[in-house]
Amino acid sequence: MTTIFSKIIAGEIPSYKLYEDEFTFAFLDIFPQVPGHTIIVPKIEVDHFTEVPEPYYSAIFQTAKKLAPALKKVTGCNRVCAAFLGYQIPHCHYQLLPTASEADFVWSAMPQAKSEDLQLLQKNILSELDS
Image (cartoon, rainbow, N blue to C red; front, side):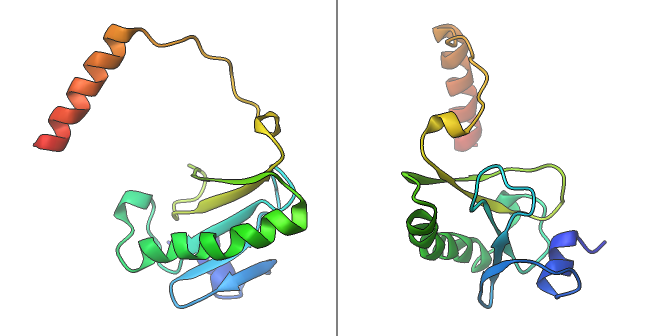
């Protein structure tokens, strides 16, 4: 099934395009979390970032590296944060979020994790990496 991002890349749906190259397409989010909220997508339909093949994967970060300084200058932010987020659209998307401070995001205050829980999780992850 063609994703909304593929339709944006194809020009079937209008967008506020910021950048395009052979492997990526970047545009302003029309439902921004903050002004300048930018989405970078690979020009192939892959749901999760761990499944994005080269050279698309590296191109996402090269595009982010090109756009972040412009976003910072234009928005006057202190930092451009970035994350692979989103369950809504099954097309990998890297989001750039110009921020003045951490207050720009609403994070739930979480209690500190127990040492024994972190140790067990660490052990299990390291075991998986070794397998």
